[in-house]
Length: 467
Image (cartoon, rainbow, N blue to C red):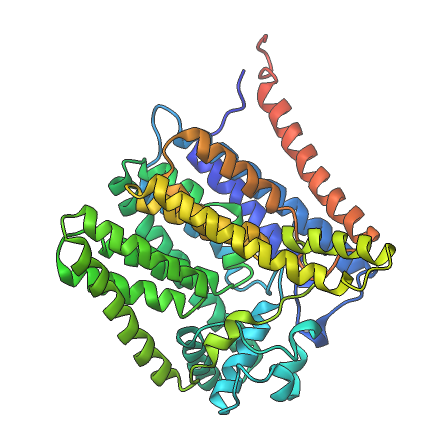
Protein backbone atom coordinates (compact mmCIF):
# COMPACT_ATOMS: atom_id res chain seq x y z
CA UNK A 1 0.00 0.00 0.00
CA UNK A 2 1.36 3.43 -0.89
CA UNK A 3 1.74 6.13 1.73
CA UNK A 4 -1.59 7.99 1.61
CA UNK A 5 -1.28 11.69 0.95
CA UNK A 6 -3.40 14.43 -0.53
CA UNK A 7 -3.22 18.19 -0.78
CA UNK A 8 -4.60 18.71 2.72
CA UNK A 9 -2.12 16.31 4.32
CA UNK A 10 0.74 18.01 2.48
CA UNK A 11 -0.55 21.36 3.69
CA UNK A 12 -0.73 20.19 7.31
CA UNK A 13 2.67 18.48 7.20
CA UNK A 14 4.36 21.58 5.78
CA UNK A 15 2.56 23.78 8.32
CA UNK A 16 3.88 21.56 11.12
CA UNK A 17 7.35 21.94 9.65
CA UNK A 18 7.30 25.74 9.56
CA UNK A 19 5.67 25.87 12.99
CA UNK A 20 8.58 23.90 14.46
CA UNK A 21 10.95 26.19 12.56
CA UNK A 22 9.36 29.25 14.14
CA UNK A 23 9.29 27.74 17.64
CA UNK A 24 12.85 26.47 17.45
CA UNK A 25 14.02 29.80 16.10
CA UNK A 26 12.90 31.52 19.32
CA UNK A 27 16.00 30.11 21.03
CA UNK A 28 18.25 28.98 18.15
CA UNK A 29 17.61 31.63 15.47
CA UNK A 30 19.57 34.73 14.46
CA UNK A 31 18.33 36.55 17.54
CA UNK A 32 19.07 40.13 18.64
CA UNK A 33 22.28 40.33 20.64
CA UNK A 34 20.54 40.84 23.97
CA UNK A 35 18.46 37.69 23.42
CA UNK A 36 21.27 35.39 22.28
CA UNK A 37 21.77 32.20 24.23
CA UNK A 38 25.03 30.30 24.39
CA UNK A 39 25.02 27.38 21.92
CA UNK A 40 25.52 24.98 24.82
CA UNK A 41 22.42 26.10 26.71
CA UNK A 42 19.54 23.67 26.99
CA UNK A 43 17.07 26.06 25.35
CA UNK A 44 19.34 26.71 22.37
CA UNK A 45 20.03 22.99 21.98
CA UNK A 46 16.34 22.12 22.05
CA UNK A 47 15.61 24.92 19.59
CA UNK A 48 18.26 23.67 17.17
CA UNK A 49 16.81 20.16 17.27
CA UNK A 50 13.35 21.62 16.71
CA UNK A 51 14.44 23.69 13.73
CA UNK A 52 15.97 20.74 11.89
CA UNK A 53 13.00 18.55 12.81
CA UNK A 54 10.83 21.20 11.15
CA UNK A 55 13.11 21.46 8.10
CA UNK A 56 12.82 17.71 7.47
CA UNK A 57 9.02 17.84 7.80
CA UNK A 58 8.90 20.77 5.37
CA UNK A 59 11.11 19.01 2.81
CA UNK A 60 8.96 15.88 3.09
CA UNK A 61 5.77 17.90 2.58
CA UNK A 62 7.31 19.57 -0.46
CA UNK A 63 8.41 16.25 -1.99
CA UNK A 64 4.96 14.72 -1.45
CA UNK A 65 3.34 17.82 -2.94
CA UNK A 66 5.59 17.41 -5.98
CA UNK A 67 4.22 13.89 -6.47
CA UNK A 68 0.71 15.34 -6.45
CA UNK A 69 1.70 18.00 -8.97
CA UNK A 70 2.99 15.28 -11.30
CA UNK A 71 -0.07 13.08 -10.70
CA UNK A 72 -3.16 12.54 -12.84
CA UNK A 73 -5.16 15.23 -10.98
CA UNK A 74 -2.65 17.96 -10.07
CA UNK A 75 -3.72 20.82 -7.79
CA UNK A 76 -4.53 24.12 -9.45
CA UNK A 77 -2.15 27.09 -9.20
CA UNK A 78 -4.67 28.79 -6.92
CA UNK A 79 -4.64 25.79 -4.55
CA UNK A 80 -0.84 25.83 -4.52
CA UNK A 81 -0.80 29.53 -3.68
CA UNK A 82 -3.02 28.75 -0.68
CA UNK A 83 -0.54 26.06 0.40
CA UNK A 84 2.27 28.62 0.12
CA UNK A 85 0.36 31.08 2.31
CA UNK A 86 -0.35 28.41 4.94
CA UNK A 87 3.27 27.24 5.05
CA UNK A 88 4.61 30.78 5.29
CA UNK A 89 2.18 31.94 8.00
CA UNK A 90 4.12 30.68 11.08
CA UNK A 91 7.29 32.37 9.81
CA UNK A 92 5.72 35.83 9.61
CA UNK A 93 6.40 36.67 13.27
CA UNK A 94 9.30 34.28 13.81
CA UNK A 95 12.76 35.68 14.58
CA UNK A 96 15.23 35.92 11.69
CA UNK A 97 16.54 32.49 10.72
CA UNK A 98 19.66 31.19 8.96
CA UNK A 99 21.30 34.61 8.51
CA UNK A 100 21.89 37.95 10.22
CA UNK A 101 21.73 39.87 6.92
CA UNK A 102 18.41 41.49 7.82
CA UNK A 103 20.19 43.42 10.59
CA UNK A 104 22.64 44.72 7.99
CA UNK A 105 19.70 45.89 5.86
CA UNK A 106 18.25 47.82 8.79
CA UNK A 107 21.59 49.36 9.74
CA UNK A 108 22.29 50.41 6.14
CA UNK A 109 18.82 51.94 5.87
CA UNK A 110 19.47 53.92 9.04
CA UNK A 111 22.79 55.07 7.59
CA UNK A 112 21.10 56.40 4.45
CA UNK A 113 18.48 58.06 6.63
CA UNK A 114 21.30 59.70 8.62
CA UNK A 115 23.07 60.83 5.39
CA UNK A 116 26.09 58.57 5.98
CA UNK A 117 27.77 57.28 2.81
CA UNK A 118 26.70 53.65 2.98
CA UNK A 119 29.13 52.65 0.22
CA UNK A 120 32.20 54.23 1.84
CA UNK A 121 31.50 53.08 5.41
CA UNK A 122 30.24 49.97 7.16
CA UNK A 123 27.53 49.89 9.83
CA UNK A 124 30.20 50.50 12.50
CA UNK A 125 30.14 54.14 11.34
CA UNK A 126 26.51 54.33 12.43
CA UNK A 127 27.28 53.01 15.91
CA UNK A 128 24.65 52.26 18.52
CA UNK A 129 22.55 49.17 19.20
CA UNK A 130 21.57 48.62 15.57
CA UNK A 131 25.17 48.39 14.39
CA UNK A 132 25.87 45.89 17.20
CA UNK A 133 23.35 43.51 15.64
CA UNK A 134 25.32 43.27 12.38
CA UNK A 135 27.58 40.23 12.01
CA UNK A 136 31.14 41.31 13.02
CA UNK A 137 32.66 40.44 9.65
CA UNK A 138 30.34 42.96 7.89
CA UNK A 139 30.44 45.88 10.34
CA UNK A 140 33.25 47.62 8.47
CA UNK A 141 32.13 46.70 4.94
CA UNK A 142 30.23 49.03 2.63
CA UNK A 143 26.80 48.03 1.34
CA UNK A 144 26.80 45.76 -1.73
CA UNK A 145 23.20 46.66 -2.59
CA UNK A 146 21.77 49.08 -5.11
CA UNK A 147 20.03 52.41 -4.49
CA UNK A 148 16.52 51.05 -5.05
CA UNK A 149 16.82 48.72 -2.07
CA UNK A 150 18.65 51.23 0.09
CA UNK A 151 15.95 53.84 -0.57
CA UNK A 152 13.37 51.32 0.61
CA UNK A 153 15.48 50.44 3.65
CA UNK A 154 15.88 54.14 4.45
CA UNK A 155 12.13 54.72 4.21
CA UNK A 156 11.53 51.75 6.50
CA UNK A 157 14.10 53.13 8.96
CA UNK A 158 12.29 56.45 9.10
CA UNK A 159 8.91 54.76 9.43
CA UNK A 160 10.00 52.49 12.30
CA UNK A 161 12.22 55.12 13.96
CA UNK A 162 14.99 52.58 14.46
CA UNK A 163 12.84 50.24 16.57
CA UNK A 164 14.25 46.75 15.99
CA UNK A 165 11.04 44.63 16.25
CA UNK A 166 9.18 46.94 13.88
CA UNK A 167 12.14 47.03 11.49
CA UNK A 168 12.43 43.23 11.40
CA UNK A 169 8.70 42.89 10.71
CA UNK A 170 8.93 45.53 7.99
CA UNK A 171 11.80 43.74 6.25
CA UNK A 172 9.94 40.46 6.43
CA UNK A 173 6.87 42.07 4.86
CA UNK A 174 9.10 43.39 2.05
CA UNK A 175 10.42 39.86 1.54
CA UNK A 176 6.87 38.47 1.52
CA UNK A 177 5.93 41.03 -1.11
CA UNK A 178 8.83 39.78 -3.22
CA UNK A 179 7.73 36.16 -2.82
CA UNK A 180 4.17 37.13 -3.75
CA UNK A 181 5.45 38.80 -6.93
CA UNK A 182 7.48 35.66 -7.72
CA UNK A 183 4.38 33.50 -7.29
CA UNK A 184 2.36 35.89 -9.46
CA UNK A 185 4.92 35.82 -12.28
CA UNK A 186 5.69 32.09 -12.34
CA UNK A 187 2.45 30.78 -13.96
CA UNK A 188 2.61 33.45 -16.68
CA UNK A 189 6.25 32.69 -17.48
CA UNK A 190 5.56 28.95 -17.45
CA UNK A 191 2.68 29.23 -19.92
CA UNK A 192 4.77 31.43 -22.18
CA UNK A 193 7.59 28.85 -22.05
CA UNK A 194 5.28 25.89 -22.67
CA UNK A 195 5.71 24.55 -19.13
CA UNK A 196 3.20 23.45 -16.49
CA UNK A 197 2.24 26.41 -14.24
CA UNK A 198 1.60 24.13 -11.25
CA UNK A 199 5.03 22.51 -11.58
CA UNK A 200 6.60 25.97 -11.88
CA UNK A 201 4.94 27.15 -8.68
CA UNK A 202 5.94 23.98 -6.84
CA UNK A 203 9.61 24.32 -7.72
CA UNK A 204 9.94 28.10 -7.89
CA UNK A 205 7.77 29.36 -5.01
CA UNK A 206 6.98 26.46 -2.65
CA UNK A 207 10.61 25.40 -2.60
CA UNK A 208 12.00 25.01 0.96
CA UNK A 209 14.80 27.46 0.11
CA UNK A 210 12.19 30.15 -0.55
CA UNK A 211 10.53 29.60 2.82
CA UNK A 212 13.73 29.14 4.80
CA UNK A 213 15.75 32.00 3.36
CA UNK A 214 13.50 34.45 1.54
CA UNK A 215 10.69 34.36 4.11
CA UNK A 216 12.33 33.25 7.37
CA UNK A 217 15.63 34.94 6.49
CA UNK A 218 13.92 38.05 5.01
CA UNK A 219 16.55 38.34 2.27
CA UNK A 220 16.28 41.10 -0.31
CA UNK A 221 16.78 38.46 -3.03
CA UNK A 222 13.00 37.98 -2.79
CA UNK A 223 12.35 41.55 -3.94
CA UNK A 224 14.99 41.25 -6.65
CA UNK A 225 13.42 38.07 -8.05
CA UNK A 226 9.87 39.40 -7.76
CA UNK A 227 10.70 42.52 -9.78
CA UNK A 228 12.70 40.47 -12.27
CA UNK A 229 9.82 38.04 -12.78
CA UNK A 230 7.29 40.83 -13.32
CA UNK A 231 9.65 42.49 -15.78
CA UNK A 232 9.93 39.33 -17.84
CA UNK A 233 6.14 38.95 -17.84
CA UNK A 234 5.79 42.52 -19.15
CA UNK A 235 8.36 41.86 -21.90
CA UNK A 236 6.35 39.12 -23.60
CA UNK A 237 4.22 41.40 -25.82
CA UNK A 238 5.37 43.19 -28.98
CA UNK A 239 4.33 46.68 -27.90
CA UNK A 240 7.10 49.20 -27.10
CA UNK A 241 5.35 50.16 -23.85
CA UNK A 242 5.72 46.58 -22.62
CA UNK A 243 9.43 46.70 -23.37
CA UNK A 244 9.80 49.97 -21.48
CA UNK A 245 7.90 48.69 -18.43
CA UNK A 246 9.92 45.47 -18.53
CA UNK A 247 13.25 47.30 -18.68
CA UNK A 248 12.21 49.57 -15.80
CA UNK A 249 11.21 46.63 -13.59
CA UNK A 250 14.32 44.59 -14.39
CA UNK A 251 16.54 47.62 -13.78
CA UNK A 252 14.89 48.17 -10.40
CA UNK A 253 15.61 44.51 -9.64
CA UNK A 254 19.26 45.09 -10.55
CA UNK A 255 19.28 48.17 -8.31
CA UNK A 256 18.33 45.83 -5.47
CA UNK A 257 21.03 43.26 -6.32
CA UNK A 258 23.27 43.53 -9.36
CA UNK A 259 22.94 40.00 -10.87
CA UNK A 260 19.42 40.83 -12.06
CA UNK A 261 20.96 43.15 -14.69
CA UNK A 262 21.37 40.04 -16.86
CA UNK A 263 17.59 40.15 -17.17
CA UNK A 264 17.91 43.01 -19.67
CA UNK A 265 19.25 40.44 -22.16
CA UNK A 266 16.07 38.45 -21.72
CA UNK A 267 13.88 41.55 -22.03
CA UNK A 268 15.39 42.40 -25.42
CA UNK A 269 15.22 38.76 -26.56
CA UNK A 270 11.57 38.39 -25.52
CA UNK A 271 10.65 41.59 -27.33
CA UNK A 272 12.39 40.35 -30.49
CA UNK A 273 10.61 37.01 -30.23
CA UNK A 274 7.31 38.87 -29.91
CA UNK A 275 7.88 40.58 -33.27
CA UNK A 276 9.88 43.75 -32.60
CA UNK A 277 12.95 44.50 -34.68
CA UNK A 278 16.25 43.89 -32.85
CA UNK A 279 17.60 47.46 -32.92
CA UNK A 280 14.48 49.17 -31.48
CA UNK A 281 14.11 46.40 -28.89
CA UNK A 282 17.69 46.78 -27.67
CA UNK A 283 17.77 50.59 -27.73
CA UNK A 284 14.42 50.89 -25.93
CA UNK A 285 15.60 48.53 -23.16
CA UNK A 286 18.93 50.34 -22.84
CA UNK A 287 17.38 53.82 -22.74
CA UNK A 288 14.67 52.84 -20.23
CA UNK A 289 17.31 51.17 -18.05
CA UNK A 290 19.59 54.21 -18.11
CA UNK A 291 16.77 56.62 -17.19
CA UNK A 292 15.58 54.33 -14.39
CA UNK A 293 19.09 54.09 -12.99
CA UNK A 294 19.55 57.86 -12.94
CA UNK A 295 16.14 58.51 -11.37
CA UNK A 296 16.44 55.74 -8.74
CA UNK A 297 19.92 56.88 -7.73
CA UNK A 298 18.76 60.50 -7.45
CA UNK A 299 15.71 59.54 -5.37
CA UNK A 300 17.80 57.35 -3.05
CA UNK A 301 20.35 60.11 -2.57
CA UNK A 302 23.16 57.57 -2.24
CA UNK A 303 25.18 58.76 -5.23
CA UNK A 304 26.91 56.39 -7.63
CA UNK A 305 29.06 54.67 -5.05
CA UNK A 306 27.01 51.54 -5.75
CA UNK A 307 29.06 51.06 -8.93
CA UNK A 308 32.23 50.86 -6.85
CA UNK A 309 30.39 48.57 -4.41
CA UNK A 310 30.08 45.92 -7.11
CA UNK A 311 33.62 44.95 -6.11
CA UNK A 312 32.80 44.88 -2.37
CA UNK A 313 35.13 42.28 -0.87
CA UNK A 314 33.72 38.99 0.28
CA UNK A 315 34.93 36.83 3.11
CA UNK A 316 37.90 34.73 2.04
CA UNK A 317 36.55 31.94 4.26
CA UNK A 318 33.27 31.39 2.39
CA UNK A 319 32.46 28.10 0.70
CA UNK A 320 32.35 29.32 -2.90
CA UNK A 321 34.06 26.97 -5.35
CA UNK A 322 36.65 29.55 -6.37
CA UNK A 323 37.37 30.41 -2.72
CA UNK A 324 37.90 26.74 -1.86
CA UNK A 325 40.26 26.28 -4.80
CA UNK A 326 42.04 29.53 -3.92
CA UNK A 327 42.59 28.48 -0.31
CA UNK A 328 43.84 25.05 -1.36
CA UNK A 329 46.22 26.60 -3.91
CA UNK A 330 47.40 29.17 -1.38
CA UNK A 331 48.11 26.48 1.21
CA UNK A 332 50.10 24.49 -1.36
CA UNK A 333 52.13 27.53 -2.43
CA UNK A 334 52.77 28.46 1.19
CA UNK A 335 53.97 24.91 1.87
CA UNK A 336 56.34 25.26 -1.06
CA UNK A 337 57.60 28.57 0.29
CA UNK A 338 56.27 30.64 -2.61
CA UNK A 339 55.61 34.36 -2.17
CA UNK A 340 52.61 34.03 -4.51
CA UNK A 341 50.43 32.36 -1.85
CA UNK A 342 48.46 35.56 -0.96
CA UNK A 343 47.51 35.95 -4.63
CA UNK A 344 45.90 32.52 -4.91
CA UNK A 345 42.38 33.43 -3.77
CA UNK A 346 42.14 36.65 -5.87
CA UNK A 347 43.49 34.77 -8.89
CA UNK A 348 40.88 32.04 -8.55
CA UNK A 349 38.16 34.66 -8.13
CA UNK A 350 39.24 36.27 -11.41
CA UNK A 351 39.27 32.88 -13.10
CA UNK A 352 35.77 32.28 -11.77
CA UNK A 353 34.54 35.55 -13.24
CA UNK A 354 36.15 34.70 -16.60
CA UNK A 355 34.58 31.24 -16.56
CA UNK A 356 31.23 32.82 -15.74
CA UNK A 357 31.47 35.19 -18.71
CA UNK A 358 32.39 32.37 -21.08
CA UNK A 359 29.62 30.12 -19.78
CA UNK A 360 26.98 32.85 -20.09
CA UNK A 361 28.06 33.61 -23.66
CA UNK A 362 27.81 29.90 -24.53
CA UNK A 363 24.38 29.59 -22.87
CA UNK A 364 22.94 32.51 -24.82
CA UNK A 365 24.38 31.28 -28.11
CA UNK A 366 22.79 27.88 -27.55
CA UNK A 367 19.48 29.01 -26.02
CA UNK A 368 18.83 32.45 -27.50
CA UNK A 369 15.38 31.29 -28.59
CA UNK A 370 14.53 30.36 -25.00
CA UNK A 371 15.45 33.57 -23.16
CA UNK A 372 13.81 32.81 -19.80
CA UNK A 373 15.57 29.45 -19.53
CA UNK A 374 18.85 30.98 -20.72
CA UNK A 375 18.57 33.68 -18.07
CA UNK A 376 17.89 31.08 -15.37
CA UNK A 377 20.97 29.07 -16.32
CA UNK A 378 23.04 32.27 -16.52
CA UNK A 379 22.04 33.37 -13.02
CA UNK A 380 22.72 29.88 -11.67
CA UNK A 381 26.17 30.07 -13.25
CA UNK A 382 26.80 33.43 -11.57
CA UNK A 383 25.82 31.93 -8.21
CA UNK A 384 27.98 28.80 -8.59
CA UNK A 385 31.16 30.38 -10.00
CA UNK A 386 30.98 33.72 -8.18
CA UNK A 387 33.38 34.73 -5.41
CA UNK A 388 30.74 34.13 -2.72
CA UNK A 389 27.91 31.65 -2.40
CA UNK A 390 25.01 31.21 -0.04
CA UNK A 391 22.25 28.58 -0.35
CA UNK A 392 19.66 31.19 -1.33
CA UNK A 393 21.80 32.42 -4.24
CA UNK A 394 20.78 29.27 -6.08
CA UNK A 395 17.25 30.70 -6.17
CA UNK A 396 18.41 33.34 -8.66
CA UNK A 397 18.50 30.70 -11.37
CA UNK A 398 16.13 28.13 -9.88
CA UNK A 399 13.23 30.61 -9.95
CA UNK A 400 13.43 30.94 -13.75
CA UNK A 401 14.45 27.34 -14.43
CA UNK A 402 11.26 26.36 -12.60
CA UNK A 403 9.26 28.39 -15.11
CA UNK A 404 11.06 27.36 -18.29
CA UNK A 405 12.84 24.03 -17.79
CA UNK A 406 12.48 21.96 -20.96
CA UNK A 407 11.69 18.67 -19.18
CA UNK A 408 11.03 17.08 -15.79
CA UNK A 409 14.57 15.69 -15.64
CA UNK A 410 15.98 19.20 -15.29
CA UNK A 411 13.44 20.03 -12.60
CA UNK A 412 14.30 16.85 -10.66
CA UNK A 413 18.01 17.72 -10.64
CA UNK A 414 17.39 21.27 -9.50
CA UNK A 415 14.89 20.08 -6.86
CA UNK A 416 17.46 17.61 -5.48
CA UNK A 417 20.00 20.43 -5.20
CA UNK A 418 17.47 22.60 -3.38
CA UNK A 419 16.61 19.80 -0.94
CA UNK A 420 20.28 19.30 -0.02
CA UNK A 421 20.96 23.03 0.36
CA UNK A 422 17.94 23.41 2.64
CA UNK A 423 19.95 21.53 5.28
CA UNK A 424 23.19 23.45 4.81
CA UNK A 425 22.98 26.43 7.21
CA UNK A 426 22.44 26.68 10.95
CA UNK A 427 19.43 28.76 12.07
CA UNK A 428 21.68 31.22 13.92
CA UNK A 429 23.43 32.10 10.66
CA UNK A 430 26.80 31.49 12.32
CA UNK A 431 29.50 28.86 11.82
CA UNK A 432 28.84 25.39 13.18
CA UNK A 433 30.81 23.52 15.80
CA UNK A 434 30.71 19.77 16.38
CA UNK A 435 28.09 19.97 19.10
CA UNK A 436 25.73 22.04 16.96
CA UNK A 437 26.18 19.67 14.03
CA UNK A 438 25.25 16.73 16.28
CA UNK A 439 22.12 18.54 17.46
CA UNK A 440 21.15 19.48 13.91
CA UNK A 441 21.58 15.92 12.69
CA UNK A 442 19.60 14.66 15.68
CA UNK A 443 16.70 16.94 14.80
CA UNK A 444 16.77 15.77 11.19
CA UNK A 445 16.93 12.10 12.19
CA UNK A 446 14.02 12.63 14.56
CA UNK A 447 12.02 14.06 11.66
CA UNK A 448 12.86 11.04 9.49
CA UNK A 449 11.84 8.66 12.29
CA UNK A 450 8.51 10.40 12.78
CA UNK A 451 7.80 10.29 9.05
CA UNK A 452 8.75 6.61 8.89
CA UNK A 453 6.44 5.80 11.79
CA UNK A 454 3.62 7.64 10.03
CA UNK A 455 4.37 5.65 6.87
CA UNK A 456 4.28 2.37 8.81
CA UNK A 457 1.04 3.30 10.54
CA UNK A 458 -0.55 4.12 7.20
CA UNK A 459 0.43 0.72 5.82
CA UNK A 460 -0.87 -1.23 8.80
CA UNK A 461 -4.31 -2.87 8.28
CA UNK A 462 -7.20 -1.41 10.22
CA UNK A 463 -8.36 -3.29 13.33
CA UNK A 464 -10.57 -6.23 12.44
CA UNK A 465 -9.26 -6.39 8.88
CA UNK A 466 -6.57 -8.51 7.31
CA UNK A 467 -3.83 -7.07 5.18
